[in-house]
Length: 67
Image (cartoon, rainbow, N blue to C red; front, top):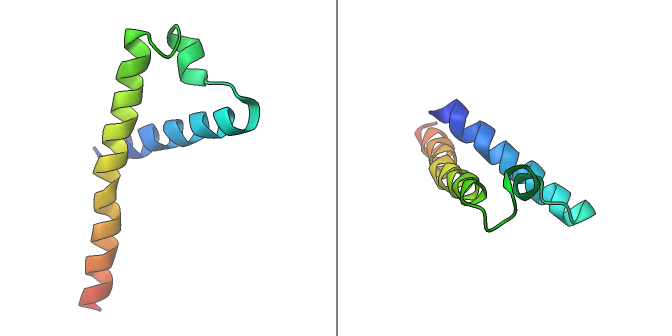
């Protein structure tokens, strides 16, 4: 699950980088636009992966507290 979340977060980060640099939304272009059902699923999965990845920050904080 950790690897899947990391992959989705990387995909989201790359997509946002493309939007920022080139005004090109890769997810939307692959799945039929921002309003397309598949695009919305991908955006939702990336968001859930980002929320799930918060646990990595919490794990690091608890490790440092133990030291």
